[in-house]
Length: 165
Ligand code: S3P
Image 1 (cartoon, rainbow, N blue to C red):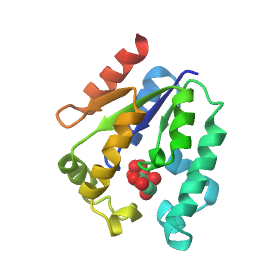
Image 2: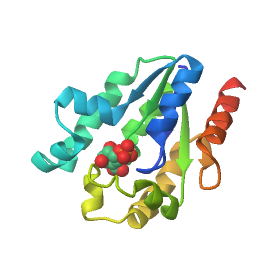
Image 3: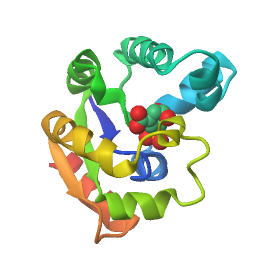
Image 4: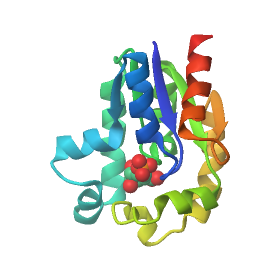
């Protein structure tokens, strides 16, 4: 199927870049966090606080199942989607997975003032989460873009070039 799936840490720009690429390609753009919030009528923080992270993860996995039939769609995923290997397998079947790879310094800078909506950061640092997650993102993605030194526009151009191949 012809889809683009953006993965990476919180603060790597998956939502912003996904929206722009979707508009450029004339494809639909979906954001898994936003979809879960809309379906549950609650913010991600409320879901974590009222229920638990594992409840959120099961909602995320159910959503990936529901998305299996989409086409010509850019999907911006929540940073933890690759924690579940079944999600990764399903996403691979759906299209090109791109890892927006940023260093913890870049991520911390991007997240300044935006941490309240990220419950995981209440008790864990970006550095620690990155150390655990980076190998998972690397294994899941077909294309890895090091975003530390490039602009969003350059990132978008790299992805569009790859899709045109
Ligand atoms: C999470 C990232 C968040 C959201 C949730 C958990 C994670 O999405 O899904 O707070 O585990 O890294 P963003 O990557 O869009 O911030």
